[in-house]
Length: 247
Ligand SMILES: [Zn+2]
Ligand SMILES: [Zn+2]
Image (cartoon, rainbow, N blue to C red; front, side):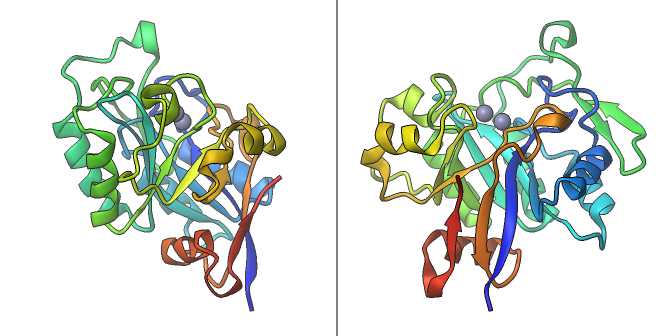
């Protein structure tokens, strides 16, 4: 029997300079449960240092927290990496940190980058320039995510900045995204009209929440057996009646 899992796969914590300070891992987990979301992904810009705290907070509660990251390519396109376990995302983080543009975060200009634990205690302020690009091409990022067993999703393809379409104007054929993400900025009908040339990709939508109130404003329903990356990969490909749906 397939089950329906409501997923919001794009959520920023207080580690992202642009996110609200109240986006602590424990507040995010609490809000997700209140909003009856079954699966969330923590996807901070170019870092995953709050993933473990979110996974620990979720513990054996009725919520799956995927280990994610929103990586910025050298073309300044945002790409979501989604994995099951923190171990894999930490490997990606090592690669991303080695390829981040040099420089320090200017907290007054971009905001603070706060690493917290599951008890909401501040562990450190990340000084890296997380808001900047990496020197990794979109191709290199997608290939790296796949080599780690993760899903690579093109972020907010409808946005006129920091999306693969805004940066390249098209999606090169050899860029094997597992899905494209439509942002909450446009509805499904407009997306179907605007991006009809890209219907051969599976589509999802997510909140891209930077504030607690925005969590779950758009979710994707996955019809699958278990809340795992492998089942999500099969659902995106419509294998054996699995499917994804969103409004
Ligand atoms: Zn983004
Ligand atoms: Zn984002």
